[in-house]
Length: 411
Image (cartoon, rainbow, N blue to C red; front, side):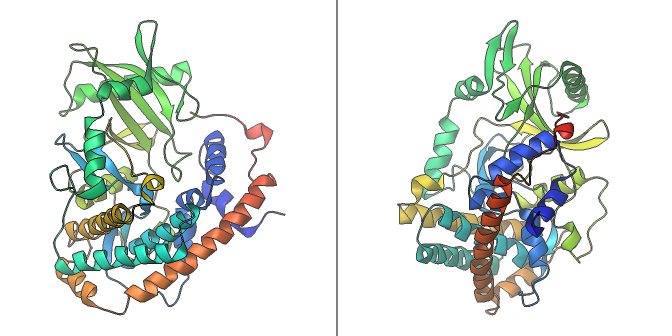
Protein backbone atom coordinates (compact mmCIF):
# COMPACT_ATOMS: atom_id res chain seq x y z
CA UNK A 1 0.00 0.00 0.00
CA UNK A 2 1.37 3.40 -1.05
CA UNK A 3 2.07 5.75 1.88
CA UNK A 4 0.55 9.23 2.07
CA UNK A 5 4.04 10.67 1.65
CA UNK A 6 4.57 8.78 -1.59
CA UNK A 7 1.15 9.81 -2.85
CA UNK A 8 2.11 13.47 -2.34
CA UNK A 9 5.39 12.99 -4.18
CA UNK A 10 3.85 11.08 -7.07
CA UNK A 11 1.11 13.69 -7.49
CA UNK A 12 3.58 16.59 -7.55
CA UNK A 13 5.89 14.98 -10.11
CA UNK A 14 3.27 13.38 -12.37
CA UNK A 15 3.50 15.99 -15.16
CA UNK A 16 7.28 15.87 -15.52
CA UNK A 17 9.27 13.78 -18.02
CA UNK A 18 8.72 10.17 -16.86
CA UNK A 19 12.25 8.85 -17.39
CA UNK A 20 13.82 11.93 -15.82
CA UNK A 21 11.50 11.69 -12.81
CA UNK A 22 12.90 8.20 -12.27
CA UNK A 23 16.36 9.77 -12.09
CA UNK A 24 15.03 12.37 -9.66
CA UNK A 25 13.65 9.67 -7.37
CA UNK A 26 16.99 7.88 -7.52
CA UNK A 27 18.87 11.06 -6.57
CA UNK A 28 16.47 11.71 -3.69
CA UNK A 29 17.26 8.28 -2.27
CA UNK A 30 20.94 9.25 -1.82
CA UNK A 31 20.54 10.87 1.62
CA UNK A 32 18.17 13.03 3.68
CA UNK A 33 19.64 16.31 2.43
CA UNK A 34 19.20 15.29 -1.21
CA UNK A 35 15.63 14.29 -0.34
CA UNK A 36 15.11 17.71 1.27
CA UNK A 37 16.40 19.45 -1.86
CA UNK A 38 13.98 17.52 -4.05
CA UNK A 39 10.87 18.11 -1.92
CA UNK A 40 10.49 21.87 -1.59
CA UNK A 41 6.74 21.47 -2.11
CA UNK A 42 6.44 19.22 0.96
CA UNK A 43 8.19 21.80 3.14
CA UNK A 44 5.81 24.61 2.25
CA UNK A 45 2.69 22.48 2.22
CA UNK A 46 3.51 21.47 5.80
CA UNK A 47 4.50 25.01 6.77
CA UNK A 48 1.20 26.43 5.51
CA UNK A 49 -0.64 24.28 8.06
CA UNK A 50 1.35 25.49 11.09
CA UNK A 51 -0.82 27.76 13.25
CA UNK A 52 1.79 29.18 15.62
CA UNK A 53 4.40 30.14 13.07
CA UNK A 54 5.83 33.69 13.44
CA UNK A 55 4.10 36.24 11.21
CA UNK A 56 6.35 38.41 9.06
CA UNK A 57 6.16 41.05 6.31
CA UNK A 58 5.94 40.01 2.64
CA UNK A 59 9.20 39.98 0.69
CA UNK A 60 10.53 38.47 -2.51
CA UNK A 61 12.07 35.10 -1.75
CA UNK A 62 13.92 32.56 -3.93
CA UNK A 63 11.63 29.97 -2.35
CA UNK A 64 14.04 27.04 -2.21
CA UNK A 65 16.81 28.49 -0.08
CA UNK A 66 19.26 25.88 1.18
CA UNK A 67 23.03 25.51 1.46
CA UNK A 68 23.41 24.17 -2.09
CA UNK A 69 21.56 27.11 -3.65
CA UNK A 70 24.40 29.56 -3.09
CA UNK A 71 27.18 29.54 -5.64
CA UNK A 72 29.44 31.44 -7.99
CA UNK A 73 28.60 32.54 -11.51
CA UNK A 74 29.70 35.09 -14.06
CA UNK A 75 27.38 38.09 -14.24
CA UNK A 76 26.32 40.02 -17.31
CA UNK A 77 29.15 42.45 -16.54
CA UNK A 78 31.58 39.46 -16.84
CA UNK A 79 32.62 39.63 -13.16
CA UNK A 80 32.36 36.60 -10.88
CA UNK A 81 29.83 36.77 -8.03
CA UNK A 82 28.86 34.54 -5.12
CA UNK A 83 25.11 34.78 -4.48
CA UNK A 84 21.76 33.05 -4.31
CA UNK A 85 21.47 31.27 -7.64
CA UNK A 86 18.23 29.26 -7.94
CA UNK A 87 14.92 31.06 -8.44
CA UNK A 88 12.59 28.42 -9.91
CA UNK A 89 10.32 28.69 -6.85
CA UNK A 90 10.69 32.48 -6.39
CA UNK A 91 7.56 34.25 -5.16
CA UNK A 92 6.24 37.04 -2.91
CA UNK A 93 5.90 35.41 0.50
CA UNK A 94 6.29 35.98 4.25
CA UNK A 95 9.91 36.77 5.08
CA UNK A 96 10.17 34.01 7.68
CA UNK A 97 9.27 31.33 5.13
CA UNK A 98 12.59 31.83 3.36
CA UNK A 99 14.62 31.97 6.55
CA UNK A 100 12.96 28.87 7.99
CA UNK A 101 13.91 26.78 4.96
CA UNK A 102 17.50 28.02 5.10
CA UNK A 103 17.73 27.15 8.81
CA UNK A 104 16.16 23.74 8.30
CA UNK A 105 18.66 23.02 5.53
CA UNK A 106 21.51 23.59 7.99
CA UNK A 107 20.17 20.99 10.42
CA UNK A 108 19.41 18.46 7.66
CA UNK A 109 22.75 18.95 5.90
CA UNK A 110 24.80 18.81 9.09
CA UNK A 111 23.02 15.66 10.19
CA UNK A 112 23.77 14.12 6.78
CA UNK A 113 27.44 15.07 7.21
CA UNK A 114 27.45 13.52 10.71
CA UNK A 115 28.20 16.87 12.34
CA UNK A 116 27.10 17.04 15.98
CA UNK A 117 23.63 18.54 16.66
CA UNK A 118 25.17 21.11 19.03
CA UNK A 119 27.37 22.41 16.20
CA UNK A 120 24.40 22.56 13.86
CA UNK A 121 22.41 24.59 16.39
CA UNK A 122 25.37 26.92 16.90
CA UNK A 123 25.78 27.50 13.15
CA UNK A 124 22.03 27.96 12.60
CA UNK A 125 22.02 30.50 15.43
CA UNK A 126 24.89 32.31 13.75
CA UNK A 127 22.98 32.39 10.45
CA UNK A 128 19.93 33.84 12.20
CA UNK A 129 21.97 36.40 14.15
CA UNK A 130 23.83 37.61 11.05
CA UNK A 131 20.66 37.70 8.96
CA UNK A 132 18.92 39.80 11.61
CA UNK A 133 21.84 42.22 11.91
CA UNK A 134 21.94 42.83 8.15
CA UNK A 135 18.16 43.20 7.94
CA UNK A 136 18.17 45.68 10.83
CA UNK A 137 20.93 47.68 9.14
CA UNK A 138 18.75 48.11 6.04
CA UNK A 139 21.69 47.97 3.62
CA UNK A 140 22.26 45.36 0.91
CA UNK A 141 25.74 43.88 0.40
CA UNK A 142 27.24 41.64 -2.27
CA UNK A 143 30.22 39.34 -2.74
CA UNK A 144 32.63 39.49 -5.68
CA UNK A 145 36.42 38.94 -5.87
CA UNK A 146 37.00 42.41 -4.41
CA UNK A 147 34.71 42.07 -1.38
CA UNK A 148 34.99 38.34 -0.57
CA UNK A 149 36.74 37.18 2.59
CA UNK A 150 37.78 33.86 4.11
CA UNK A 151 36.97 30.61 2.35
CA UNK A 152 34.60 32.31 -0.11
CA UNK A 153 37.45 34.55 -1.27
CA UNK A 154 39.69 31.54 -1.92
CA UNK A 155 36.75 29.77 -3.54
CA UNK A 156 36.00 32.61 -5.97
CA UNK A 157 39.67 33.03 -6.84
CA UNK A 158 40.01 29.31 -7.53
CA UNK A 159 37.01 29.09 -9.83
CA UNK A 160 37.96 32.37 -11.51
CA UNK A 161 41.42 31.02 -12.36
CA UNK A 162 40.02 27.74 -13.63
CA UNK A 163 40.89 27.59 -17.29
CA UNK A 164 38.06 27.66 -19.78
CA UNK A 165 39.84 24.86 -21.64
CA UNK A 166 39.25 22.59 -18.62
CA UNK A 167 35.56 23.46 -18.75
CA UNK A 168 35.45 22.82 -22.50
CA UNK A 169 37.24 19.48 -22.21
CA UNK A 170 34.82 18.43 -19.47
CA UNK A 171 31.76 19.17 -21.59
CA UNK A 172 33.01 18.32 -25.08
CA UNK A 173 34.76 15.80 -27.22
CA UNK A 174 36.09 16.05 -30.75
CA UNK A 175 33.98 14.06 -33.15
CA UNK A 176 34.02 14.16 -36.92
CA UNK A 177 33.66 17.77 -38.03
CA UNK A 178 34.66 19.26 -34.70
CA UNK A 179 33.53 19.77 -31.11
CA UNK A 180 30.45 17.94 -29.83
CA UNK A 181 28.81 17.90 -26.41
CA UNK A 182 30.05 14.89 -24.46
CA UNK A 183 27.14 12.55 -23.70
CA UNK A 184 27.65 10.82 -20.35
CA UNK A 185 24.01 9.80 -19.69
CA UNK A 186 24.34 11.27 -16.20
CA UNK A 187 24.21 15.02 -16.75
CA UNK A 188 24.16 15.18 -20.56
CA UNK A 189 21.82 13.07 -22.67
CA UNK A 190 21.40 12.72 -26.42
CA UNK A 191 18.25 14.09 -28.06
CA UNK A 192 16.79 12.58 -31.21
CA UNK A 193 17.89 13.95 -34.56
CA UNK A 194 14.68 15.77 -35.47
CA UNK A 195 14.37 17.46 -32.08
CA UNK A 196 18.03 18.48 -32.15
CA UNK A 197 17.55 20.14 -35.53
CA UNK A 198 14.56 22.12 -34.21
CA UNK A 199 16.46 23.19 -31.09
CA UNK A 200 19.49 24.32 -33.05
CA UNK A 201 17.27 26.33 -35.39
CA UNK A 202 15.53 27.92 -32.39
CA UNK A 203 18.81 29.18 -30.92
CA UNK A 204 20.09 30.27 -34.34
CA UNK A 205 16.97 32.41 -34.79
CA UNK A 206 17.32 33.77 -31.26
CA UNK A 207 20.91 34.85 -31.89
CA UNK A 208 19.91 36.63 -35.10
CA UNK A 209 17.37 38.76 -33.27
CA UNK A 210 19.22 39.25 -29.98
CA UNK A 211 20.86 42.58 -29.29
CA UNK A 212 23.10 40.95 -26.70
CA UNK A 213 24.65 38.39 -29.00
CA UNK A 214 27.21 38.92 -31.80
CA UNK A 215 26.25 37.56 -35.21
CA UNK A 216 29.43 35.53 -35.71
CA UNK A 217 28.33 32.40 -33.80
CA UNK A 218 26.81 29.18 -35.06
CA UNK A 219 25.06 26.41 -33.11
CA UNK A 220 27.27 23.33 -33.26
CA UNK A 221 25.41 20.91 -30.99
CA UNK A 222 22.55 20.47 -28.51
CA UNK A 223 21.85 17.99 -25.71
CA UNK A 224 19.47 17.35 -22.84
CA UNK A 225 20.89 18.52 -19.50
CA UNK A 226 20.30 17.43 -15.91
CA UNK A 227 21.40 19.49 -12.90
CA UNK A 228 20.35 19.90 -9.28
CA UNK A 229 17.59 17.80 -7.73
CA UNK A 230 14.27 19.64 -7.43
CA UNK A 231 14.14 20.63 -11.10
CA UNK A 232 15.06 17.20 -12.50
CA UNK A 233 12.17 16.20 -14.74
CA UNK A 234 11.74 19.59 -16.38
CA UNK A 235 12.84 19.98 -19.98
CA UNK A 236 16.34 21.44 -19.98
CA UNK A 237 18.71 21.77 -22.92
CA UNK A 238 22.27 22.95 -23.40
CA UNK A 239 23.86 24.28 -26.56
CA UNK A 240 27.40 24.48 -27.85
CA UNK A 241 27.99 27.69 -29.80
CA UNK A 242 31.14 28.29 -31.81
CA UNK A 243 32.53 31.56 -33.09
CA UNK A 244 33.33 31.68 -36.78
CA UNK A 245 36.26 33.94 -35.89
CA UNK A 246 37.80 31.89 -33.06
CA UNK A 247 36.81 28.22 -33.07
CA UNK A 248 38.91 27.51 -29.98
CA UNK A 249 36.58 29.48 -27.70
CA UNK A 250 33.09 27.96 -27.75
CA UNK A 251 30.26 29.26 -25.59
CA UNK A 252 27.62 27.23 -23.79
CA UNK A 253 24.05 28.35 -23.15
CA UNK A 254 21.16 26.50 -21.56
CA UNK A 255 17.39 26.81 -21.66
CA UNK A 256 15.27 25.47 -18.83
CA UNK A 257 11.53 24.91 -18.83
CA UNK A 258 9.56 26.90 -16.26
CA UNK A 259 6.45 26.06 -14.31
CA UNK A 260 4.61 27.73 -11.46
CA UNK A 261 6.29 28.02 -8.08
CA UNK A 262 5.53 25.06 -5.83
CA UNK A 263 4.77 27.60 -3.09
CA UNK A 264 1.92 29.18 -5.08
CA UNK A 265 -0.90 26.96 -3.70
CA UNK A 266 0.02 27.91 -0.12
CA UNK A 267 0.54 31.66 -0.49
CA UNK A 268 -2.32 34.00 0.48
CA UNK A 269 -0.42 37.16 -0.55
CA UNK A 270 -1.64 38.65 -3.86
CA UNK A 271 0.93 38.14 -6.60
CA UNK A 272 1.65 40.33 -9.64
CA UNK A 273 0.05 39.20 -12.89
CA UNK A 274 2.87 37.63 -14.87
CA UNK A 275 2.66 37.05 -18.62
CA UNK A 276 4.58 33.81 -18.08
CA UNK A 277 6.42 31.89 -15.37
CA UNK A 278 9.67 32.85 -17.08
CA UNK A 279 8.80 36.53 -16.63
CA UNK A 280 8.23 35.85 -12.92
CA UNK A 281 11.52 34.05 -12.49
CA UNK A 282 13.60 36.57 -14.44
CA UNK A 283 12.01 39.59 -12.74
CA UNK A 284 12.60 38.28 -9.22
CA UNK A 285 16.09 37.04 -10.03
CA UNK A 286 17.08 40.46 -11.38
CA UNK A 287 15.69 42.23 -8.33
CA UNK A 288 17.13 39.93 -5.65
CA UNK A 289 20.60 39.34 -7.10
CA UNK A 290 23.15 42.13 -7.20
CA UNK A 291 24.09 41.17 -10.76
CA UNK A 292 22.29 38.50 -12.80
CA UNK A 293 23.87 35.85 -15.08
CA UNK A 294 24.71 36.72 -18.66
CA UNK A 295 22.11 36.43 -21.46
CA UNK A 296 19.22 35.98 -19.01
CA UNK A 297 16.07 36.01 -21.14
CA UNK A 298 12.84 34.21 -22.06
CA UNK A 299 12.38 31.88 -25.03
CA UNK A 300 9.40 29.80 -26.22
CA UNK A 301 9.67 26.34 -27.78
CA UNK A 302 6.72 24.08 -28.71
CA UNK A 303 4.35 26.12 -26.48
CA UNK A 304 6.61 25.70 -23.44
CA UNK A 305 8.25 28.75 -21.90
CA UNK A 306 11.94 28.53 -20.99
CA UNK A 307 14.53 30.70 -19.30
CA UNK A 308 17.71 31.07 -21.32
CA UNK A 309 21.10 32.00 -19.89
CA UNK A 310 24.79 31.44 -20.48
CA UNK A 311 26.48 28.48 -18.84
CA UNK A 312 29.68 29.49 -17.12
CA UNK A 313 33.01 27.73 -16.60
CA UNK A 314 33.15 29.35 -13.16
CA UNK A 315 29.77 28.12 -11.91
CA UNK A 316 30.37 26.20 -8.70
CA UNK A 317 29.22 25.61 -5.12
CA UNK A 318 30.91 25.42 -1.74
CA UNK A 319 31.79 21.84 -0.78
CA UNK A 320 30.81 21.60 2.89
CA UNK A 321 32.44 18.19 3.20
CA UNK A 322 35.82 19.86 2.72
CA UNK A 323 35.36 22.66 5.27
CA UNK A 324 33.39 20.97 8.05
CA UNK A 325 36.52 20.48 10.18
CA UNK A 326 37.44 24.18 10.06
CA UNK A 327 35.11 26.13 12.35
CA UNK A 328 36.41 29.48 11.13
CA UNK A 329 35.79 28.65 7.47
CA UNK A 330 32.42 27.10 8.19
CA UNK A 331 31.18 30.04 10.25
CA UNK A 332 32.44 32.55 7.68
CA UNK A 333 30.54 30.82 4.88
CA UNK A 334 27.35 30.69 6.94
CA UNK A 335 27.65 34.39 7.80
CA UNK A 336 28.14 35.21 4.13
CA UNK A 337 25.06 33.20 3.18
CA UNK A 338 22.99 34.92 5.88
CA UNK A 339 24.22 38.32 4.71
CA UNK A 340 23.29 37.53 1.11
CA UNK A 341 19.84 36.31 2.14
CA UNK A 342 19.00 39.51 4.00
CA UNK A 343 20.60 41.63 1.28
CA UNK A 344 18.46 40.03 -1.43
CA UNK A 345 15.31 40.99 0.48
CA UNK A 346 16.52 44.52 1.17
CA UNK A 347 17.60 44.97 -2.45
CA UNK A 348 14.14 43.98 -3.73
CA UNK A 349 12.23 45.89 -1.04
CA UNK A 350 9.30 48.09 -2.01
CA UNK A 351 8.90 46.49 -5.46
CA UNK A 352 5.56 45.11 -6.68
CA UNK A 353 4.12 44.42 -3.24
CA UNK A 354 7.22 43.60 -1.22
CA UNK A 355 7.73 45.45 2.07
CA UNK A 356 9.71 48.66 2.00
CA UNK A 357 13.10 48.74 3.71
CA UNK A 358 11.76 50.61 6.75
CA UNK A 359 9.31 47.77 7.39
CA UNK A 360 12.06 45.17 7.05
CA UNK A 361 14.26 47.11 9.48
CA UNK A 362 11.39 47.39 11.96
CA UNK A 363 10.77 43.63 11.75
CA UNK A 364 14.46 42.93 12.24
CA UNK A 365 14.36 44.91 15.48
CA UNK A 366 11.59 42.77 16.91
CA UNK A 367 12.77 40.10 19.36
CA UNK A 368 9.88 37.64 19.31
CA UNK A 369 10.39 35.68 16.07
CA UNK A 370 13.96 34.38 16.05
CA UNK A 371 13.70 31.67 18.71
CA UNK A 372 10.39 30.22 17.42
CA UNK A 373 11.89 30.11 13.92
CA UNK A 374 14.96 28.25 15.15
CA UNK A 375 12.82 25.79 17.12
CA UNK A 376 10.63 25.15 14.09
CA UNK A 377 13.70 24.42 11.95
CA UNK A 378 14.95 21.89 14.50
CA UNK A 379 11.56 20.22 14.72
CA UNK A 380 11.04 20.09 10.97
CA UNK A 381 14.52 18.74 10.32
CA UNK A 382 13.52 15.75 12.46
CA UNK A 383 10.43 15.34 10.30
CA UNK A 384 12.63 15.40 7.19
CA UNK A 385 14.66 12.55 8.67
CA UNK A 386 11.50 10.53 9.30
CA UNK A 387 10.06 11.37 5.88
CA UNK A 388 13.30 10.31 4.23
CA UNK A 389 13.21 6.95 6.01
CA UNK A 390 9.63 6.45 4.83
CA UNK A 391 10.59 7.51 1.31
CA UNK A 392 13.56 5.16 1.21
CA UNK A 393 11.35 2.27 2.30
CA UNK A 394 8.75 3.09 -0.35
CA UNK A 395 11.42 3.59 -3.00
CA UNK A 396 13.04 0.24 -2.26
CA UNK A 397 9.61 -1.40 -2.34
CA UNK A 398 9.10 -0.14 -5.91
CA UNK A 399 6.37 2.43 -5.19
CA UNK A 400 8.09 4.90 -7.52
CA UNK A 401 8.86 2.49 -10.37
CA UNK A 402 7.53 3.50 -13.75
CA UNK A 403 5.11 1.08 -15.45
CA UNK A 404 6.67 -0.49 -18.56
CA UNK A 405 4.08 1.08 -20.88
CA UNK A 406 5.12 4.55 -19.68
CA UNK A 407 8.88 4.10 -20.08
CA UNK A 408 9.25 6.53 -22.96
CA UNK A 409 11.38 9.62 -23.22
CA UNK A 410 10.28 13.08 -24.26
CA UNK A 411 13.72 14.63 -24.23
